[in-house]
Image (cartoon, rainbow, N blue to C red):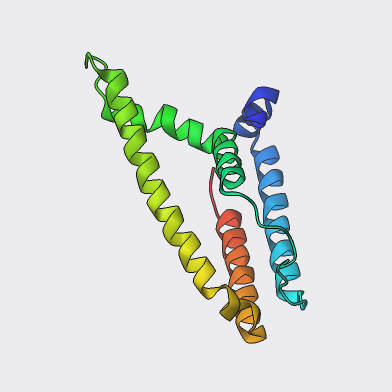
Length: 154
């Protein structure tokens, strides 16, 4: 969004040199992140002495994160209207229904992710070999993303 507002997107679209330069800066950054991830040796620590947050605090925080997330707004503006006819007299109601279904599915998926993460937390934190392999997988993913970006066309 910032690139579009400042005109950077138009510059990158019209100038192949500017696009390639930015692309290779991105590749270099991804490779740097991969290297740092691979070379990190410290143990993963989780703060256990912090006071637990209230359920209301967690809910408010989650709502704010979603409201301030531009990807979610773009999704609702670009994707959902494709499933509602412009001639439908109840278009607003249909959009609310589709949004509610999306939110319900998202809630179920996030609860499953959270439950799974909580269940394996101690197994991951207490095993240095698991952490080493996780770092290798993450570093490999960053290298793969960098390679894909390097060979991508506009």
